[in-house]
Length: 80
Image 1 (cartoon, rainbow, N blue to C red):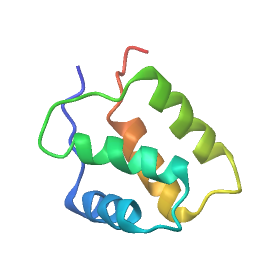
Image 2: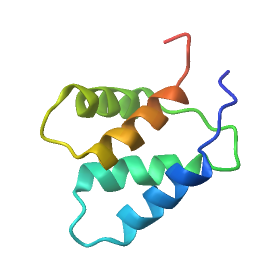
Image 3: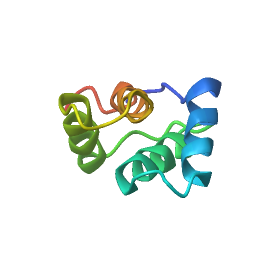
Image 4: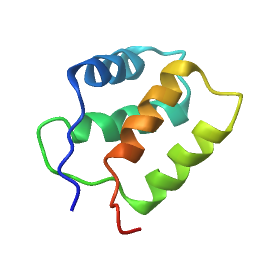
């Protein structure tokens, strides 16, 4: 089990992304996942791990979205 939690900086970024009407659906999905892991020991699910991995490999996403993706992957199940 991974006990990492979302940092304050990533939580703040995720909050900004969710409030921004111009943010992509992908960014908002990652932001929601990051916020769900702020004070809980939730782990990232396999579907979000796959999405976050694709974001990090792509050049079309912003650095903010990639920061969220990195945070999501750091909170994934290490056995997967």
